[in-house]
Amino acid sequence: MKIYTKTGDKGTTSLTGGTRVPKFHIRVEAYGTVDELISYIGLIRSQKIDSHLIETLHQIQIKLMDIAAIMASDEKAKKLRHVSDDDIKIIENEIDKYNAELEPLKYFVLPGGHYIPAFCHIARCICRRAERMILRVNAESAVPENVLIYINRLSDYLFVLARKLHKTLDVQELFWITDK
Figure 1 (cartoon, rainbow, N blue to C red):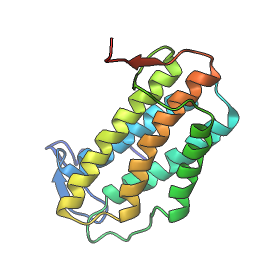
Figure 2: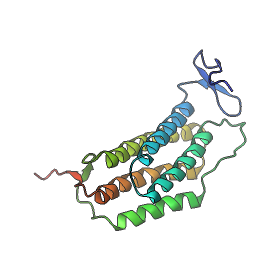
Figure 3: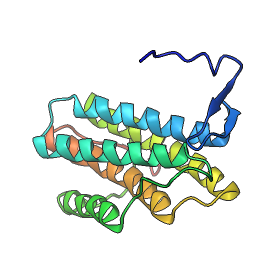
């Protein structure tokens, strides 16, 4: 199979279902941002971290591929991918488990201190951008509610994961302390 098709040379691409749209279409922006997030999570997975985290992040990448496929589908496409309540619950359980191990926050966290948690913060920011893009798609054409919930929970997970990794790596978190 050839990698290039030449069908996008004039600035359009095809959604699953056949509709051609400009490459700057909000759906393309949404699935492109999710793709960026998948890649960044792959970078986190590639670090020397706990095998449970590696597997969890792998499962998140798979679910994000499903979300990208949903975003890349027009109204005519068969809906083959979905996000279940169980997918959301897995993320929530991970958040709750890690958060129980952490000191309560008194200040905003400043990313940094170690490159692995910093990667998590970058992924969190990309996730928030993906969420904004998906919400824009939702304003034009209904997006399944669980997609919106999952992507919102995922940014929370990435935040808590960064904090957990600071603790695991025995690296001091950095805070924005405004009362000095």
